[in-house]
Image (cartoon, rainbow, N blue to C red; front, side):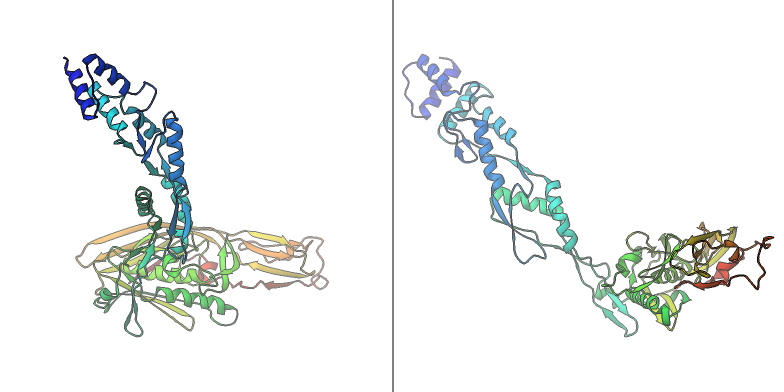
Length: 501
């Protein structure tokens, strides 16, 4: 008797079958094995017996659909009531092809002994082919990302109240971990759990309340101040300056940490405490929400630059500013243009802002002043401005509005020389470009442009047919709201400037 026949007899005996001859055992074995294109008899698929004569693929598809349609109560951060979702909506994707392949391998793959053993175990209901699945992260993320955007809260670091000499406590942030959500969905699908909880992850701030109670801020590391109007039509702009400065006061910049002006000050909206004020937009003065915030950024940049902090991101204005010298200004735009500073020192630096009667001051405080900074500014080139004349139907004859003063454009070289306590020096050279700002007049239709004042360096001879001055129609030129005369630096080409702090 061959070895294979002996195994067949042993397997048949274990199945409580009685055979009389070797030939009969072999014939019985052939009946036990599944047909080439059929699954093993008695096979379980995902815990349920495969009905005799049914389509394996159809049965697997049915079980997969049951998985996908299973409902789960999803508990989300910021929501008082759970949301009912199906596993399919949560991104669960059963692998139908893999389940079919595994089922068809039972009794078909391996030696004759292995095939017979598997076929007998299948007949006894002892082989169950599970339906596996994966979680499609992109589908889950598409649903969760808007929720994450609404519910995530950044950590709020502790700050110093330098007027009251106290610590403003920190607040940990919260965020929805999308990758942990994928793992959680997978666990729910695997265990058949009826609920899915996606709690927010708590994120501690970099500066805790306990840490701030021990820092040394006895030395002034840097200082700068600028002036602004705060009465009458300047009241809203002054309010914005005070609001933005207050958000920065007491902020702690740890060693190596990068600070984003926009992130700390927040969105310039009415709801966030900002008012309408004049600001530069696409080269023109317009009224927008948050006007004046750039002066806060410029004053902070100058104090930080002259203190030796690293300037990671900074953009000059599109024109020289009347309140600060060229090369030290910094423009910011909510959501796009930022001022980012890095603390390169081995100790924390604390920002201290003061706003009082038209003066904004920034002090940078720390345990020592590690560097002496010299700022040198050289004018490389000057460009005259041009004039734009725009006809406006609502103006009466003889009335002209100066909407915007012209300002020359400049190209300047900035040089920062830093002398450290150990005697080493470091020099940085960069270039700022300030495009020329066009002079803009609003005039009634048909206005003769010769009545406008000459541009710088331009002389005008009256035309031969010009009327005598006594009979010419009078012309009134008025300033549009928010228009101020250029400062001395804006109006004339500035010379070399050196500041040592």
